[in-house]
Image (tube, rainbow over all chains, first blue to last red; front, side, top):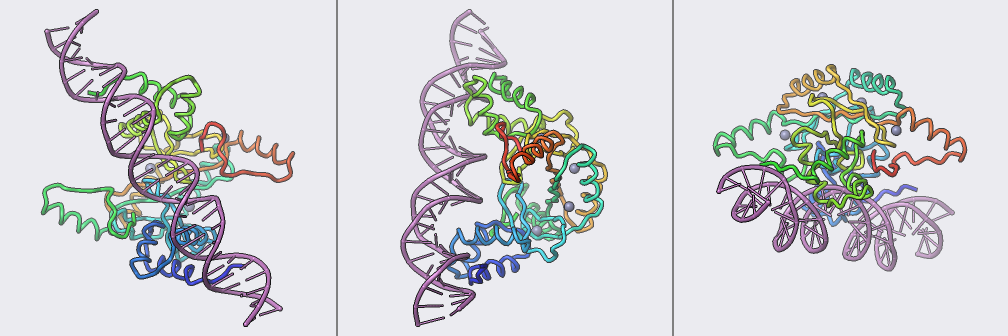
Length: 151
Length: 151
DNA sequence: AGGTTATTGATAATGATTGTCAAATAGAGC
DNA sequence: GCTCTATTTGACAATCATTATCAATAACCT
Ligand SMILES: [Zn+2]
Ligand SMILES: [Zn+2]
Ligand SMILES: [Zn+2]
Ligand SMILES: [Zn+2]
């Protein structure tokens, strides 16, 4: 009952090509820029679906936007994300897992899930930013995302 | 240059009275329900301000809503939140802090911040829910928030 | 090929959050 | 207490992401 449409393939491929986290809006824009006539609603639907079946990870950006990423392993893991270019490093952390479990149990909480993400500037973006900063006094736009829309 | 208005006090007090995390919308509704004529925009502004000066903590609920809470300590800490009643336990975790720092550094990321939250059902809500569940077959609404609007 | 039915997409609707700007007012100074 | 002025407020409009509609399209099965 699940059909294979070029739209679904398109979203899947495009997401995989991005590498890092990206918003539905940004992915749609990227697809359109690439010549695809795919609809926005379809991108939203497909991303939600991919996330539901475990083919993509999703998280809320600090400013409340939902971001998606094609993740290699189906294993539970977390992410270290560049808030400028979206570049992402997958991190598995046994220590955090056991900590989360223990804390929840100690406080009588059940059915506990955790949100663990690290946002920063990757080495490359940090370099570029410092270069620009040197040149133009102290201008900085910490929250500004680049053209990819990634965070 | 920062003025003390009854609106600001109202939001501060109300937030403290709630105890757990709550959305701006829900807090505004609560204030109105309590007879206050405070405006919605003011609640949004005040909460954002309290968060900015460190008198409140804020986080994104799993479904993208911004939640606020009056926190006791100004120290950096994390939260264990009941996704049904909003009841919250503050947790300080040296292990998580050092882990986050180390992971970021190891991958060349700078200016790193982390998001670490645990969502579950507190003992009380779990009890009530199981009672209801026993009575009415297997109905459950995992994402449903109660009248307080808390998550 | 033809029929059934999930999927698509243009668009409207929703819902949270922010912007606008005239009116209200806290706080300083008299 | 009274005035003055910059800050704050609040009704409302505007924005922005996301979801719902629903007729048209196109997979997939026979
Ligand atoms: Zn980067
Ligand atoms: Zn984990
Ligand atoms: Zn609870
Ligand atoms: Zn921390």
